[in-house]
Structure formats: C-alpha cells, structure tokens
Image 1 (cartoon, rainbow, N blue to C red):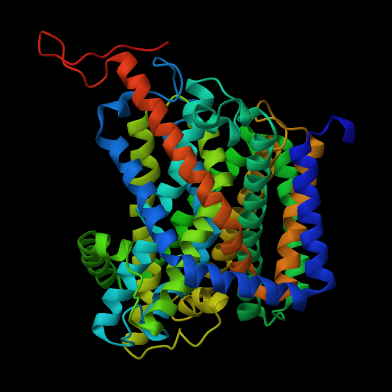
Image 2: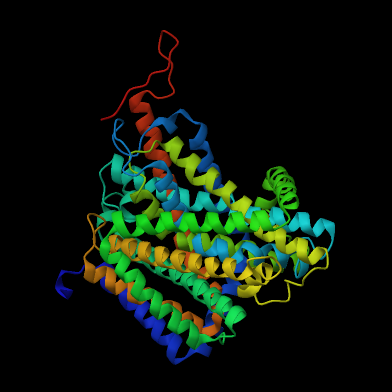
Length: 511
C-alpha cells in the first residue's frame, strides 16, 4: 500500500504527524513559537493580506460582469451534476458551516461591548460599527477567496481537462515544472494549509459543542471533554465519508440547511424581529458604502485599532485563505456545468446575503438584549454566547439542542468533505480517493485539531492558521494570474466580446 502512495501524500502526512507530536510533547514551546511567528506576520504583513484579498475580490467580481462570464466550467452544453438548491446547500455547508454558528452571536456582541473596531463601546454607533465589520469579515471578500480557488480549479479541470490539483492550474505560467518537484511542493503546501484550516474549524466546533453542553448540563468545559466529542464525531464522519460524495455529504448538506433554517426562524420569530430587519437593512447599506475604506483599513497611526485589525480582520483573511484549498476543491468538484457568471453570483453574492441575515438575527438579538439591559451576553465565554441568548427566550432548551445538532452536522460535513478533498489532493486529483487515504486524513484531521487544542486552545488554533495561510496566499496570486491569462486567451479564440460586421457580438462555443 505505501509503495503505491505518491510523495505528496507521504510528505504531507509526515509533516502533520510531526506537528501533532510536537504539540503533544512540548505544547508550551509550540505555543510560544506559533505566537511569535503569528505576531510577526500580523504586524509586518497585515498590509499584504488586505491588498491580496481585495485583489481576489476584484478579479472575481470582474467575471460577474464581463462577457467571459458566459464560458462554462465544462463543455458549453454540459448540464450541472446537482440541482441548484443542493449545490447551494453543499457549498454553504462547506464554506461557512461551523464558523457561522460559532461567531453568529459572539462576534457582533464582542465588537459592540468588548472591543469596538472604532474604539467606541456600548454606544448606538458601536452597534452600527459592530454589524458592518461583521458583514465585512463574512461577506464577499471571504467568499471571493473561496471562489477564486474554486473557479480556477473548476475551469482547468472541467474546461481544460487537467487533474484537480492546485499545481495543475499553474501550468500556463510555470510550464512542465507543474508536473515535477515544483508542482509537488506547491501541492504539499496546499495540503498542509488545508489540514490546518479544516482542523482549526473542527477545533472551534468541538469547543462550541462543549460550551453548549456545559451551559445546559454543567458538563465540564475542558480539553478532555473536547477529546471525547472529537472522537465521537470522527467515527460519524468516517461513516459518512465511506458512503461517498453523492450520498453522505449531499444528504448531510441538505440536513444542515434544514436545521439552520429551523434555528434561524426560531430566533427570527422569538427575537426582536423588527430590530433585526432594521439592523440588517441599515448595516447592508453601511457595508456597501464603506466597503472600499474597510478593505484597506490598516490604522498606521493608532496602535489600539491596529491591534483590533490584527486580531479580527487579519485573522479572518488568514482563516479563509487557509480554508480555501479545501473549500475551493470541494466547490469546484460540485460546480461542473455552471457558467462562470452563475458560479460567481451564487458563490459570492448569495451566501454573503444569507450570512448577513444570520448575523443580523443572532448578533442583533444579542446586542438588543445587552443594549436594553435585559442580559449581559458579552461576559459569557465565546463558545457559550449563543446559548446565553437562547436562555432569554421561550423554547430555549429546544433551540439549544437544535444548535448543538447543527454544529455536529456541520462538523461532520466539514470533516467528511475535508477527507475527500485531501484524498484528491494527495492521489493525483482524479477519481475518488481510496478508503485508506480518506481514513488516514480523517484521523490526521482529528489528531491535528486535538493537538492544537491541547497546545493552547482557541489562540493556538488562530496562530497556526495565520502562519499556514501565508505561503498559500502567494500560490493563490499565481493561480489568479494563470486563470485570467488563460480565460482571456480563450475569449479571443472564441471571439467573446468582439463585434462582427453586423453589429452583433460573436458567440462561438467551444466543445
């Protein structure tokens, strides 16, 4: 078996095993090292993260309006594999899942009452700032990071017939090196970033499940309980992974959306509905109006606000970048047959609006409770804030149980998708990976999450992710350049956007 495994699998797995062992044997040392490196990156390269993420967003939005958007991710007459509702459910579950539930109340209430992005805490202005910056972190910039990776992979895989590997997308600019050691190194970096990104999210999920059980049933909130949670969920997602992409992930993604809809409607109906709607509308306008300024906000003259940007914006951009190989490959895999324009619309804009509604409902309710003196949500631990909000409304136990189930199904979906994607990345990018490979990555994902939690909890998760994202951001820049170059060349060959002698645009089809 080992002789048949390629070098990308062997080296990537070895690196992650070594990292996990270091985290278990010398946790304090690893925490110190990752903290120092993370601090250096955030302080010295924060400007870089802001610029590259905004660049990804601009590139994605250009393809929403350019005539090149009519090009399909596959043959021009190819039909999508999944229905649109199932497709949206799958990309949303993989893309935001656990994070949306974890931060749904925690981020807005923190910006409002604990540490404001503009320095004002507990004021009416703090409410407005809290929501627009939450929208900023979870809006089109986040989805553009996912979308660029997914779009490039889908285009090269289904349109140009290359393997579904990150390295294969760079062939137009690095040539045959994509098939040699350079390509393998790129794929190894991509795999390591993916493992750390997925493991971080699994860590968040385990912590919040533990937080919910602790809040409701006084179960201790510590590493050992989180170990048991991860062990149980590992078994469940292995069962799902065994059933394949068309069954396990598809059914779980639809279940996620149903549970999320139930939880959303409960909070929307029981909570301050009019306030939620007004807050959503006002925050959406503020988000659109201030988007250019927020995109490049680095606060060079205010150390306190710069610290906030490092802790939140830079952390999020790194999280999305580290998470993007996994989400990108998965979204690409389920998006065959979509046009580029349809892809960009449904991957960037629709999930952003759904996320905005989610934050206005859950975060808005938390802020309303605290602003009106009805409860103090901001003093609860991050992972318990959602359950603290539920406690102030009828059916709180029902809502809390639904939330724990939702986090669990998101957990299973993310890990299930992660094993599939990592399998593809380490077995040549074509076909379905073997059960052995998926089992290996499933175990390593869980072990990595546990090692990071053992090393330093949530802070260790965040530090490691920011570090892993840096090299992959460079790879993403190269992918974007390769994609733009190739698509525009194809557009010239097809005559897309040109005007013929009759005044009508040419619209050739490439089969």
